Length: 484
Image 1 (cartoon, rainbow, N blue to C red):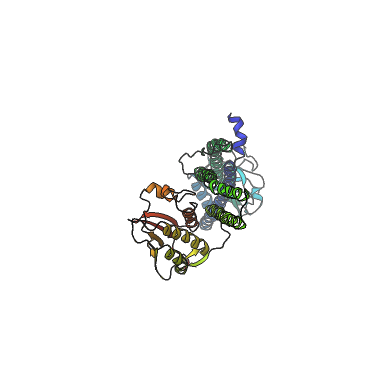
Image 2 (cartoon, helix red, strand yellow; image 1 turned 45 degrees about the horizontal axis):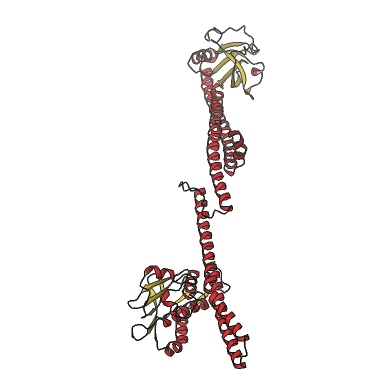
C-alpha cells in the first residue's frame, strides 16, 4: 500500500516544495561551506607566509651577528621546538647540511623565493634520525610517500651561495578542509534523511485528508446534500477549505429547501386565484350574458391577473435579492427624502381608511444603496401597518420614525393594531407566502415582509419585528454609510 502511495506523494505540491527547498538549501550550504573553506585556507596561507617572513628576518639578524655558525646553531635550537617551522641549510649543490628536513621534493631548492605550489618533504625523526645530527649524505630527492607532508617555503641564497629554506607544514589547513568536508557530508545526509521523513509523514497525512475530502465530495455529488467535508480541528488550510465548503453546502441546502417551500407555497397560495379566474371565465361564456356583464367579468379577470403578475414579480425580486444580485446600481441615497416621499405617497390612502399616518424623520441621513428597492420595502411595511392598524375601537395610528442609532440608521414603522404577540409567529411572517390565520381576511399574498427582509439583506442590514404594546413595530436597520 505504501509503495502504491509513493508516486502520489511525489506528485503532491508539498512534496515538490520540500524537494525544491532541500535542493536549494543543499546548494547554498555547499557553496557557503566551500567558500568558507577556501577563505579559511587563504587566511591560513597568508598568516603562514607572514610568519615565515618574520622568521626569515630573525634568522637574517642572527646570520649578520654571528655568521653561518650562529645561524646553524639558532636553526638547530628552533628545529627542536614542538610544532617548529621547517628549517634547512644546504650547500650550493642542494645537499642538506642542517635543519629538521630529511628530504625534499626535487627542484624545490633550485628556485629562489616563494615556492609556487606546495611541495612534499620528510622531517627528521619520522624515520628514526635525530634532527640535531642531520645526515648530509641523504639526497634531496629521497622522500618516502608514506611519511611525506605538504608545505610551502621561502628559499633564500646566502652570500656564500649556501641555501636556506624556511617553511611551514600545510597539514593544519588540510585537516581543516577535511573536517569541514566530512561535516558537510554528514549534515547533508542528516538533512536528506530528515527531509525524506518529513516528506513522507506530511505527504502521507495530506493524501489521507485529501482522500477523505474526495470521498465526502463523491457522497455529496451523489445527492447527499446533508453530508459535510471532514474538519479535524487542526486549523490548517485543509480545515479552512473544508469549513468554507461546508458553509457553502449549508447555503446550497438552505436555498434548495427555500426553493422547495416556495414551490409548495406557489402551488398552494396561487391555486385559489387561478381557480377563480377559470370559474369567472367559464361563468362568463356560459349562458346568455349582457355586454356589460362580459365587460365586468373581463375587468375582474384583468385585475386578478395584475395581482398575480405582482406576486410573481415580487417572488422574482426576492430571489434576485437573496442571491445578492440586482440589476439596479447602488449609489448614495438621501434616506431622509426617500422616507418623506413614501409617507407623503401613502397619506391619502391612510386618510381614506381612517388611519392617522405620522412621521418623525431626522434630517441629513444617507446610506449607500438603491433608492427604488428601499422605497418598495418601506411601502410594503407601511401598507401592512395601515391594513392592521385599528383594533378594539381605538383610533388607528401608524407612525414612521427615522433616526440615527448606535450601530447605524434605524427606520421603524409602528402601528397600534393587534400586533403579533407570539415571537415564533414574528419569525415566520418574514417567510414567503406565510400569512397568519387572522390575516387571511385581508388582501395580499404574504410577500410584503419577505421582500422587505430581502431588501435589507441586500443592503447589509436586517429586518426586525418587535411588539409595540399595542401593535407591532417593524424596524429596518441600515449600516452606517461609509466614505463620508
